[in-house]
Structures are given as C-alpha cells and as structure tokens.
Image (cartoon, rainbow, N blue to C red):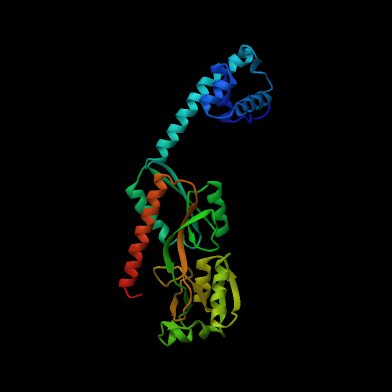
Length: 315
C-alpha cells in the first residue's frame, strides 16, 4: 500500500477493533448492532486495502490476530481515541461562538449591507473569524453545496430544493438617468418604465439579474435598445451619469455621485414591477453552527429595522 493514500474508512477500523477485542465476528456484530456479514465484509475490505492479513478465522476458537494484526491493533487504539477527541472538539467548536465562519455574498449586494453586518457581528462576537466570498448566484449555490461557505446572502433567483432560503427584504427596482435627462430636468422623481422606451439603455449584465431587468421591459410592453452592457454596478452608474442611457437597479447607494465624479438622478417606477427578494441561503438538512445561526439572526434584525426605517421615511 506504500506510495498511495489509504482509502479505508473509520467504520472499517472500528469494526475491526471490535472483532479483534472480542475475538468473534458474531460478538462484535451484537455490540455494534449490525449484521455479522457487515463486520466480516468491513474487515475483509480493510485487509485488502492494507494488503495484509490481520485476523485468522478459526471455526472452533474464533478469531486470532496475526502478528501484523497485533501491531496494527496497538497503533489503532491511539488513533481511535484521537478520533473521539477530534469529534468532541468539533462539537464544542460548533456549539460555541468562536472559530471560523465563511459566508458568500452576491457581488452587487456586498458593498451595501454587508460591511454593516460584519461590523455589528464582529462587535458582538469578537472571537469569530469571518470570511467572505463574493460571487454570482450559481457559484454561491455551488459553494454552499461544497461546504466552502455556510451561508450566502443573495437574491431568491431560481430556487433549488436542497437549499433553504430565509427571506430578509424585498428590494424594488428603480431607474437612474443623467442629470440632464428630460425627466430629471423637469424635476420629476417618478415615471413609468415605458417613458424610457425610446432611450438607450445601459444593462447591468449579470446572470439572472439581466433576465430580471429584461422581464421588467417585457411587462412594460417594449424591448430596450441596449447601448452598453457591464457586469460592474459602478460602471453602469458612471455610464448613465455620462449620458449613455438609463439603467434599472435594485440596490441603492447612499448618494447619487458616481466614481467618475458625475451624479445620477433616481427615478422611482410607478409600474407594478416585481421586487427582488433578498435572502440568506444555507444547505438544507445541515445543522447550522451557532456562529451561523447568530449571523442569520443578526441579518433578520438588521433588515427588519431597515425596512421599518424606510417605511418611516416615506419611501
């Protein structure tokens, strides 16, 4: 077996240890509460993987350890004891607010609520080391399944049956235009989407997001004339501020100034345009650590308070 990583399992090791200690496959099966054939098969597979015989099957006297089996059993005792300690350590870590917590975040959501959430969580639980992975919808779903992040802050696009989605907020779409756009110059702050039917559009061109934005145009009865596409939220805003067209967005910056130094005007849509649902996702059937549960509760409180504040401001 030299030259390759072993592929035996912890179950095979435990079954062998029980059979070796008790001297009988039958006795081991009773203690382990499994069938005798399960114990026999596990031991045979272990011997095959190791390339050495560990037990001699004697019908009259039961099982006898070979010299290799005796040495292996002696080394195995400390290994199995350590596996128990390792499991206990993991359990303690999972039930305490210390250790690592990695969350995923949809790229256009990250600059907005995430820094506030991280700061509040760190202040409350300073012993938790936070990690963030920014990505798109499909990649975040993959990361959840692979265990690379425990939670993901994302939109509720294309929901999967093996993912649990915790609703946090509804985020309404709005239009941005340059300050010299006729609607902005008229001092208007509301419009229907159809009023932009003859204008060029700058599309935030992200998977799922683009489909959502284009669906709003279909509801309004026209196909947009797309002049530029960009995957960058701020690139879209800067292009609009320079007069290249209008755009539709959901997340709202704290001010109208763009990275390019020019400002945009925000126009609220009076159409019955569907809002996007902001959710916190985790893999179904997997118990969250206390760290992840605490972060989820923080998110729920934060977005509930934000929504109340928005309603109070009359928006």
